[in-house]
Amino acid sequence: APGQMDTFDYKPVLQRMSGKSFAHDVPGVIKKFAVSNGVLFGSPFRFRRYGESGQWVSELLPHLSQHVDDLCLLKGMHTEGFDHGQAGLFFHTGASNFVRPSLGSWVSYGLGTENQSLPSFVHLGPSVDYGGHRIHASAFLPSAHQGTVIGSDSLPVSQFRLRDLRNANLPRTVQAKQMELLRAMHAGYRQRVAADAPLDGWIQSLETAFRMQVEAADVLDLSRETRATHQLYGLGHPDTDDFGRQCLMARRLSEAGVRFVLVTHSIRKQYPSVREWDQHQNLDRDHRRNARQIDQPIAALLTDLKQRGLLDETLVIWGGEFGRTPMIELVKNKPNQITKESGRNHNPLGFTIWLAGGGVKPGFSYGGTDEIGYRAVEGRVHTHDLHATLLHLLGLDHRRLTYRYAGLDVRLTGVEEARVVHEILS
Image (tube, rainbow, N blue to C red; front, side, top):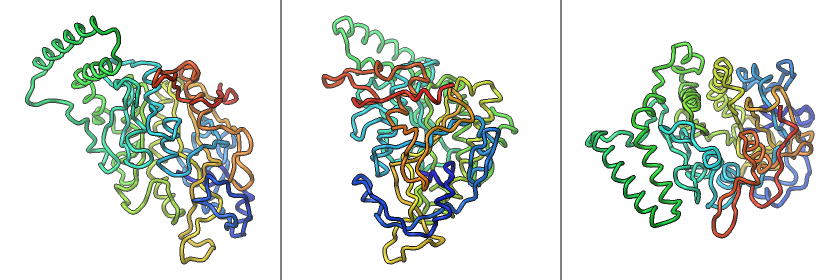
């Protein structure tokens, strides 16, 4: 997760107090990751205001800084998880256990598909970390709502392919006859059995897979884009080619009717020893490396959507699973002081995400952390509140979007009270 005080949440008090010891209460949930008497670590990155909205943005993001008047920043986020797997799972599924559908699956279940020849939920470049396959799994929802995986975090995006998209040994005419037989058998079975959601979902998945053989290959073919578009996204440049391809694929998939596209950033293909935005050490060096890969492509996606008149009807979400501490992380056998190798630890108590398009207020900042960026203290938005708001923006009521499982009407936002953040709606 990126540091909020290193990207969009400028903290002048933290800058002034950098290097000083700071005594504070450490909640039990993060005692694994924080100490009660840490050394404050001011951001090593310069900040300035941008746009008519005057939003603060770090020097890490020179391209995104030009889009602040399109962004709706939620600076009072807080969540439950304190480790990557737990927090990643909670961010994507609203629960820390392993039997809950992901946000994309709920959206697919609630809205269906716009294109019968493509899946309604696609995950580009998933990682084995941060919740693994469960962040795109449909769990107990019908399998047709599971995310279709394209590529992985260890594979260059230029090599991303849909596995087994075509069967070289079986012509489509033969496959079509097989599908006709399968439909007939299924129809006969359903005359005897009133409901069988798992089987229905499986049949629907096979139908989609059959139809995808033609359209999916075309949608994923980036050579159909102009050279100017390639340059806009940074294709061909060693820093931006990989993530640029993912963002361009995301736009093409969305434009083709895929309801929900999840894009995961991976830096390890270029820097094997560096983790994605997880700078426990070497924050200055490695946050810069991470930012160079994502800044231009994400800005390009916003530009592209806006030029095509699609931003107003597309909701773009950016963020990590939690935030980071304003104190340095203690390293064994090293002094408790700031060095060029200093980093930050995990912090679920306060962080920033942003939204763009899709019915949110542009050039708007909501909520905030305390003066050092440690805790969300105003305009607090819990992950469940975020989920409720995202569903609302898509025309879905989080209280009514339920699925009967194990005798319960399960929903994305759980049994706790969650609210739609009406303050950010345009």
